[in-house]
Length: 141
Image (cartoon, rainbow, N blue to C red; front, side):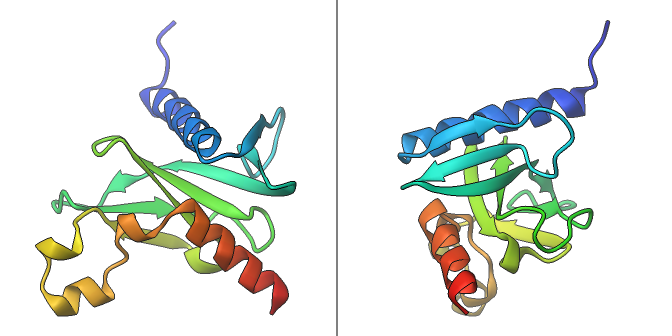
């Protein structure tokens, strides 16, 4: 039986994110059943619900990607992890930062003019540490 290519890519993205989390010192658990999140990341004994998304290319701009997150309500997940197949790269965004759609830019600051570099959400900046810090900041506010 043929498998839906989108589902296959979604599963592969989950494995890539899980591997990235483990490489960064987290323990990872998988959910079973109907959940709004795919993984649980245990970082220094803090548990974080992670929803993994395959990042989709944004139109004809090969350096722009987006995550669709409009199906999620506040509190459903803690972190969104995006996987960009074309770059073999993972980025992380806290639930507080994401909104209903999140766009990321895979270019480096060196490839952009100063104004665009300041405005763009650059993938290199959206690390796990940054997302966990943003999550902690929102919990203490």
